[in-house]
Length: 321
Image (cartoon, rainbow, N blue to C red; front, side, top):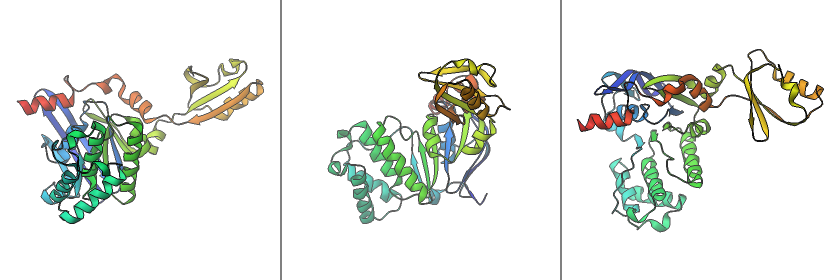
């Protein structure tokens, strides 16, 4: 597909008796931030490794920018793996320069870019430190910068915020959005669905080695046909009886939350409150979150992989054998 940065058709991968990915169709449009979502062991990392040709699929086809990945394409991709791997006794600046040169950046330009990025992430004073002298969070920031230093067309991030404090998570999120604004295609894999909801315009949800949802975030939410009402008020709550909710009204601290039935107008709930004479302090109609949608679609099976074991564990077992 000409408008696709990444295109998978009918891709499957097994390790022994365990299926890590089954019959996966996936299209990542150029210029998008695409979230690959699911619990640990769902098959996200296996999918990424097949995209990068680290692993070959048992069935199906994988195309990157219209063809199977080759050495030329690898220089146009930035990949941050879930398992971090840098040279612990190499100086920070030298390591970044080395990584950029491997991707075809001239050494002088690589050094200039690396110094600028270290300044941006507040590590300029550690440029000559060995990596092992840095905290894990600092090391993670260094590897993230090493992933984008050559200004790739496609950026693949596997659990990029794992282990970072909130300040550095926000920093890296800003950088990801900046790369997107510059036209970079970003494939973002995470089990932290809230992060994807903030960043992504499209998502694919995987559970038990299978795709359960795929599309624009707005379309995925609209497809549920669900709306929730959030209420905070003072007064008699009896006006909520037979008000047109699905299931029980839930109490969360100082406010109530309820799911509207398909044909209930949320304005009717507000009218009921006013007619009952209660003092409404908060009234909000919201769409379901991606987490709620995922749990509804995948249920308890979202925490399982076919024939037992996690995709990551099965992949490790497959490599050992």
